[in-house]
Structures are given as C-alpha cells and as structure tokens.
Image (cartoon, rainbow, N blue to C red; front, top):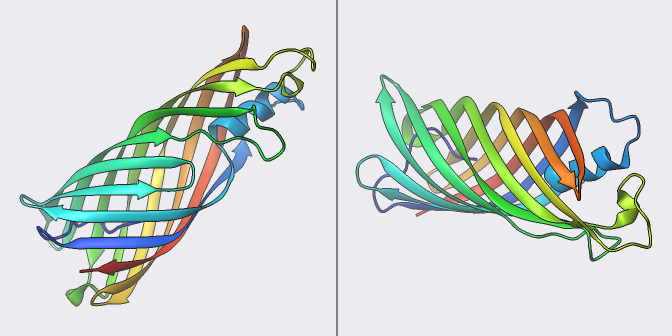
Length: 223
C-alpha cells in the first residue's frame, strides 16, 4: 500500500489499517474434500487482519520497508526508476508466515516463509496530493505445520496430529490509489492473483488452484 515512487533519503512514513485475503473463484473441484478445504485454510488463510507498515528512504532512489499484516511479517527493499512523468519501481520482499491456530482448536496451524517481487508503475500529482499505481506481482511460500485428524479425509479422528507440508506459488497484479495533503494520506489497494498450492497431510497429497483477492486500506503519516 504505497505509491510507485520511493521516499527521499531519510524520510519516513508509517501507516496503519486493515488488509484482507479472500479465496475467490476455485479453479479446482474439491467435491467437498476435507483435504482441499483444510489446505486452503492453511495456505490462503482467508480473513481480515490489522495492517501496519514503516518505510524509510535510502540514498540512490532506494527504500526499505517493514510490514505486519496479521499472519505475516515482511521485509522489503526496492529501487525506483524515473520514466518521464511516471515512476517505475521494483522490489524484493522476504516474508515470515507466523504460526496461527484455528479458533476451535490449538493443534491445527502452519508457518513458514517465502519471497515476492512486485513491479509498480505509477503517477503522482504535484505536491503529492494524488497517486495512482499498478503492476504485476509474483511470489511463493514454503509452509509446514500440523492438523487435527478430524480435518483430513479417511483419518482416525482419535489419532495423533497429522504433519502438514506445503508450497504455494502466486502470480497476479495490484492496483492502488492514494490521496492526501502534506503528511497525511489515505490509501486503498486491491490485488488479484492466481495461486497454486501443493502439499501433503502425512503421506496424502493435496493440491488446488484458486483466484485470491487481497483488498486493503490504510492511513499513512510522513515525517
């Protein structure tokens, strides 16, 4: 949730808001499979979460950022290129997926980490009153954890927790807008991505394809 241009060296922006992750159109028929539904919950983690971010400008048209979004912690470094009246930036982000248990049990959870690369092209008005941006984004995550046997097809409900291992790959795009004056800005952003997830519950393989929608909104303060 930031424009395509980076901050001037030494300038800092902090923001707070909410971000969501919504499982959209399923591209794989699960036929009510517990495995597919559990894998979706562990890898996509649909829901709304608090969002917080800090960015700092670095000499050489560079910027570093740290973002917390409920289930993940992300560290990013990006570089911007002027393109006429537009700005082009590319970023490398590394994220840690934090463990999170389901509301109805303390066993089922997944954690891990990965990376993503967004490329943004954007426009900013004089005095930075308005900003618009958009571009592609791709990434992956490696996950591991465990689940209750009752959430896996044909497993003994009274058995031990079943280990989970998974990988997700996603590719899509993001568009956003920012409006404000001087140090205060409001931001809205929407991402849509194709996601492929593959994993195992013990020795049982599971996989699915899905369109994932990630809306978000925040208020930023610069100083």
